[in-house]
Image (cartoon, rainbow, N blue to C red; front, side, top):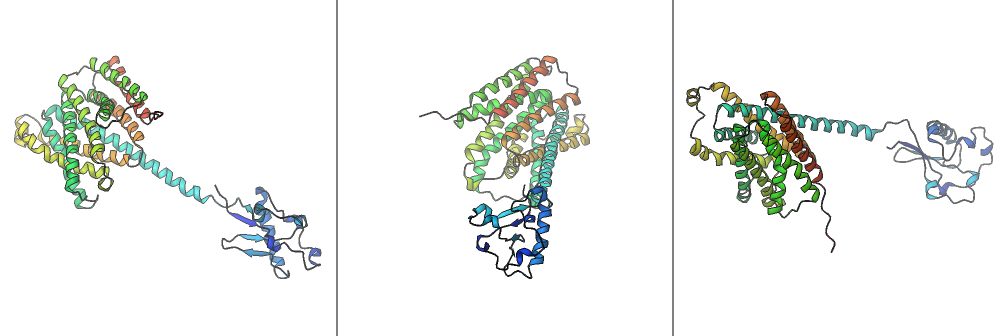
Length: 421
């Protein structure tokens, strides 16, 4: 924190004997009123006294007592008896009297910016959690009534693709220039991204939202396993220890889950594998810096490619089941189903976009901790909304698993010490 200054610098070149013998007899001021090192508390008083003295002497002195620097500081140059025969040091050559009356402009400018950044980040985290909550609620309602998870997943990719193309057409986000080589590298990511979301919807259609997300808490386990197998990244002992409560908590929650279903369980596990495979592949294939793509653009391209990949598979596996005629024949409310499907798809794409926006502003560790908190929020909100029965043992298992995820996110940054040669 700096204060502006009025400096009084005794310059060596001007330390000469006084030529005018009458000068010392002038009752203008006392030499004691010009201390070399005034205290900060008297800085303003001393500085104003010096300025008045200098103005009275400037017309009659035979030598220059003051000079104005380019930075608007006044250097009063005086000859003192106490300095005779002494060679001033470099510090004494430029003595600075710091005034305390001016504002702290640097800190004053930084404080509002820091508050603004914190507020913006808090809003993004809030939107991330809110969109995720509504996605899971609307998605569960659709899948509970409409038992075609492949079709539901295709609709979500279709709505996302429309939003992406809309942003590119109206320059809301820069349209990327992607080469054939980049598309070939992105294709495996799009495949596992499609499978990951499809398996998640299959699980949500079979078991409770809270149970699906409890199983998905095992993502760190598969991340460590796949990274070690395909990237050669050996985990630290702390990371391995943090996986134990995750696995144990999920196992305890699964045994006591009222809505347990093997199809839902294995679908959630498959979702873990595919989602973490996407992360491993992204590290393995997107390695050329000159061909790098930012996260939001990469997600947008993957969304469009996932729609193109899943469309023929949906027709082959489930046929065309989302027509008004079929929905009415199934005894469902067409308008209600369409509205909730659209809202689920919009929330799905929105929370993914906001997640990448947060990742651009914080470290991966902070983002991982935020993702852990998000899972807690989603599980709690779904239990309250759907009134899911939860036993004390089930709640304990879920809590242990989530605590393990949080611990994992904290110890992940601890790097193993290199082995001595």
